[in-house]
Image 1 (tube, rainbow, N blue to C red):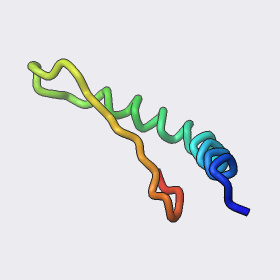
Image 2: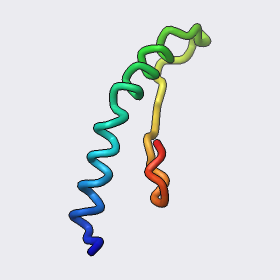
Image 3: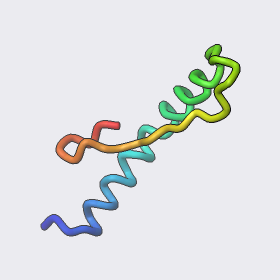
Length: 54
């Protein structure tokens, strides 16, 4: 039976499984050369609810 708690647990497990890849990608992104006037890089993480892709 699909419950909210089971759904949240599955999201947490999937994020945990991909967190190393995400951290590595973010570390790589901050090494890029950006326009000198940029003060903030803002990221949004989201999950496609039908297949849990980040």
